[in-house]
Amino acid sequence: MPATREQVVEALREVYDPEIPVNVYDLGLIYDIKVDDANKVYVRMTLTAPGCGMGPYIAQQAEWRIAEIDGVEDVEVEMVTEPPWTPELITPAGKELLGI
Image (tube, rainbow, N blue to C red; front, side, top):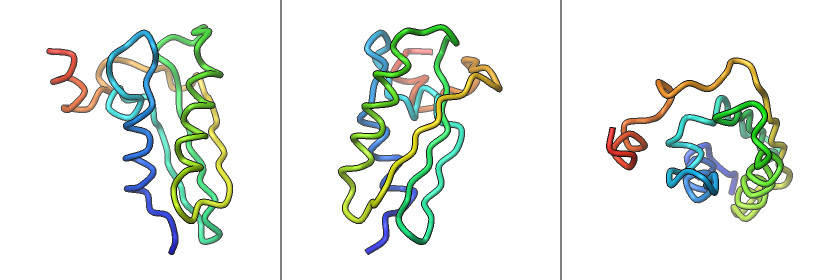
């Protein structure tokens, strides 16, 4: 059975920036999610600050979590700095978690 975008979103909701108590999806760090017909998943994401030293760790956690989804054959997580992240990208659920 092919993986779905919704499964990828749920997996990303289990990945956190260790410095912020909100998952990477609801924090608005995920810019794009694609699942192709061969069950390869591509995620384009950013960080809250371009020079964040936790970037490789967070990307690896996202990749590992997505790879656990049944049917996923390959995962690519691309870390980008453009466009820059802003607090406006936080989802309503993320804002509620942050109390804003």
